[in-house]
Length: 315
Length: 315
Image 1 (cartoon, chains in turn green, purple):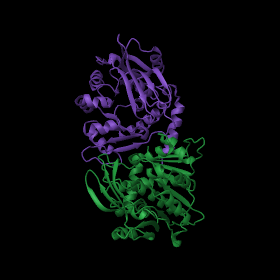
Image 2: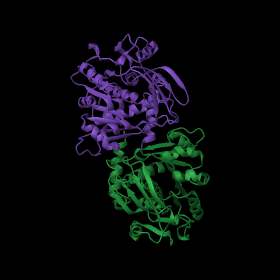
Image 3: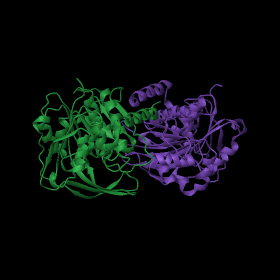
Image 4: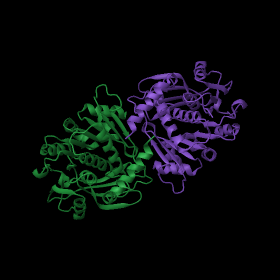
C-alpha cells in the first residue's frame, strides 16, 4: 500500500489575532484548516470537512486547494462564517478570547460526502463532540484509524458526549491544562493513564513549548516500561509570533504522517515518529500569524528542522 | 587523570515538609546537602561546605559521611541550624513557605579549609551571592570549573551581587520561573541567550516536570545550531511525594558526573551527558520525602533508570 488520503473534520474560521507585537485580521483559522494544511505536507489528498459562510475569504480556500486539500466536504452556508477574535498576553501562552461568532457552526450537522467517506485515516479535529460523532458516523471505512482532539469548552459543557467520543477512537490528543482538568489530577503521567482508561489505545498530551507526551498500554497497572511512553520536546523558538493553531497543526501533521505509511493500523513506533512530525510542523506555525509560515514551507525546510531537532534532543 | 573530588557549598538545613498526602519533620534539607549526596553517586570524595547549629541531627551527618561526603568544610556554630518549613499544594509544584529560620546563616562568612581548597570542580549551590563569592575566593585551584545555582530571593534582593557571580562562573543553573524573572522575558530560549550574555559559558534552565534546557555559544547572534542547545526531558513519575531538593539534586549529580570525567575543562557533549545524569537523580529525589530515596540508591537503580529514560525519549 502506498500513501493514502486523510479526512479531517473540524472548524474553519476567520480569525482576528492580537499579540503584544502586532494585530492581524481576516486570517485563515479553525482546527480543521490548520490540521488539513499540516497533513498535506505528508500525504495527498487531504479531505477537509467543515462549514463556512457566504463571507468566507476565497483566497484561504484557494490556498488550501493549492496544497492538495479537497473542499468537497466543506459545506457552504448562507449564514456568516465562524469567527474568533483573541488576544495573546505578553507570555504568548495565555490568551483572552474577545469574541466568538459561532454563526454557521450553531446548527451544523456534519455531512460526509460519499466520495470521501471511505477514507481510512480519520481526524476529528476540535469541534463539538456531537459534531465529532456525526462525522464518524458518516465515515464508512471498515478498517480505519480515528484520531480526535478537543478543548476545555467540551470538557465543561459536553463531558458525557466527549466520553462517547473517547470510546470509539484510537488516538486522543489533548493539551496539558485540559488533560489535568478532564482527569482531575495535576500529575500528567497519571492523567495520561486515566485518559487511556477512557477508551483510546493511544493518548497524547500536548505541552506547548515543552513538547508532548505519548501514552499507550494497559491502563490498569500502567508502567513506563519501554513501549508505553514517549516524551518529545518542542523545537526551540527564539520568538513566538502567534501560537494559534499550533496544536491543530501538530494533530494534522501527525495524521498526515500516519497516512503516508500506507496502512490503517499503527503501532507505538509509528505514533512516536508521528509525534515528532507534529512537533516539527507546530513549531513552524508559531513563527508567523495564522498559516502564513505553514503554508509556505518547502519539504527541505521540514527535513532540515527535523534533523536539527534530533541533534538538539539526543544524548 | 582519574575521577576527582568535587566541592559543594550551600545550605544545610533542617526541613519540615507538608504535602497533601503526608507531613514529615526534622528532615535533612538544604541545597548543599542534596547536591553533595547526589554528587557522591558519581565521584568521591565530595567535600561539603556549609554551616550547622548545635541542634543539627547527627544521623543526617552520619548518612552523608557514609556516602563519601566529607564534613571538614562544615562549620559548627553555637547557634541554631537553618530551618525551612513549607507546604506543597495539590499540584505539587506550587508551595507555601510557612517559616524560615535563617539562624546560623545570618552572619555566615564562608571559610574553605585549606585541605579541600584546591578541589577543581566547584559547586556554588543555592546560598546568598555573597556567600557564593566568599566560597569562590576560598577555592584555590588554578584550573577549575565553577557551577552555580540561585533562587528568586537573590534575584530580588541581591541582583548586582548575583551578576558578579555570573561573571566568574562557567555554568549557571536556574529554574524556569527564575530565569524568566531574571531576564525579563517569558520566552525561555531568549532567556537562556540573555543569561549567556551575563557571563557563563554554559546555562541550564531547569523545567521541573518538563526537564531542562542547556545553552552555550556566542550570545550575540545565538542560534540553535547543532552544538549550542540541548533539551532533556524529565523522567516520568506517576507520583511525586516531595519535590524538595530536586533542583539541588540535579545540580549535584551534574557536578559529580563531570568530576568523574577526570578533567576540569568541559565541552558541550560533557555537559549534555551531565544534564541527563542530573535529570535521572532528580527524579529519584521526588519519590520520597527529603533524601530518603536518594540516599538509598544502588548504582544499578541509576543505570536501569537511565537506560529506560533513553528508550522513553529517543526517536
